[in-house]
Image (cartoon, rainbow, N blue to C red):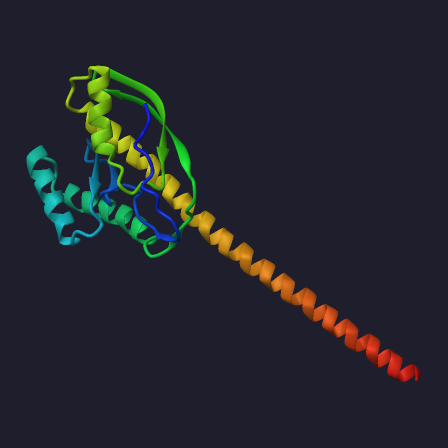
Length: 204
């Protein structure tokens, strides 16, 4: 299966999820007082942080978890959002970038194994819609599979987007290094010409 085509973005792009919706994949695995809470979902980094505490309280209440989970859940979400926000405002590497996405998931009684290509520069892509189409094509009826597939796609896109920031940073440093080297070479040649000229004057 193949993801939708490129929207033709050109030039520098500031860091964000390379999808239509800028949603951060959040994964929780918290153990406390003999109980364990695992979950995976997406979060809009533009939402106010006060929503995190509301979410934590509601989760603890609905699942009847110890109150101490409030802090654990809130801190974990805030930490992962802080990691994401640390890249915001930085340039991402752009250009033709078709990447492989691999799925190897077990959700309840369903095993999903697939591999397809995804255009990292298609900022109109929708992992959730793609997951729904994939599940429909495969005849998967479990409603938990689609969200799990979309989340797995977003996790991989997030990782690659972070790598793109690193690539852009290294590219800028490399260009600066080359410019500095060219300047140094020109300056050395200029100094060499002065020395040779001075030597000739002395000999005269």
